[in-house]
Image (cartoon, rainbow, N blue to C red):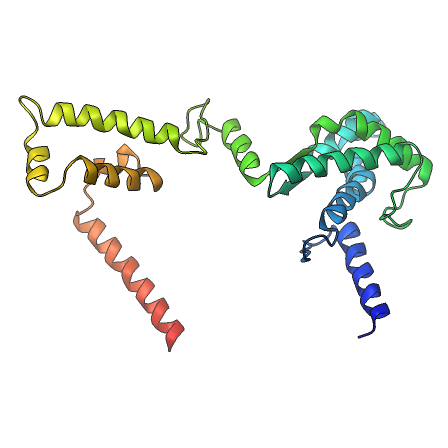
Length: 256
C-alpha cells in the first residue's frame, strides 16, 4: 500500500472518530499519533453539532426555544471523557477549553474540517461562547475519579460512608488493621482470654497469620455480614458444587 493511500485511510479514520455518533467508535493508535487531539475534536464536534441539537430539542417547550446557556449546560452535562492519568486529564481539559476559545473567535483549529459539524461559522462561534461559559460542567477525569464521584453521589445505596476516602497508599488500612489486631491480642491472650484464640495459637496460627488472613479478607471486600451465614449449610455446599461443575464443564469444552 502506498504512503498516499495510508495517509488517506488515516485521515478517513480520524474523520469518522470525530463525526460518528450513531455507533460506538474504537480508536487504536500508538503513542504520539494524535489520539488526544482526536478525542478533543470528537468532544467539540459533539458539543457544537449533534449534541447541541439534541439538547435544544430536549429543552424546547412547544415553540419556545431554550436559552443558549441552558442548551450549553445540558450538552456538557452529557459528556464524559475518561483518561488514564491526572496529567492527561488536565491536558485534555485545557485543549478543549483552548479550542472552544478558538471557535468563539471565529477560528477553526487545524485538525478540524469544514464538514465536521453542519453549522455555519457564525453559529459555531455563538455556540462556542455559550459552551465556554458553562465549561465547568464538562466532566474530564480518570476512571478512578469518575468511579469515586459516582460512589460518593450514591454512597448510601452502595453501602458506603458518605465521606469515604480512597486509601491509595494502603497506609490507613494497614494502620487500622494493626489497631484491630492489637486489641484482639490483648483481649484474647490475656486474662481470662479466648479459648478459640489460644487453640489457634497452639496450632501455630498466631498474630502474624491472623494479620495475613485479615489482609486477604479486606483486599477481597469481605464484610462482617458474610460470617453471619453458615457457609457449610446444605444449600451453600450444593451451590458451590454446582458452580464448580459449571466451571469444570466450561474448561473441558475449551480444551476438547
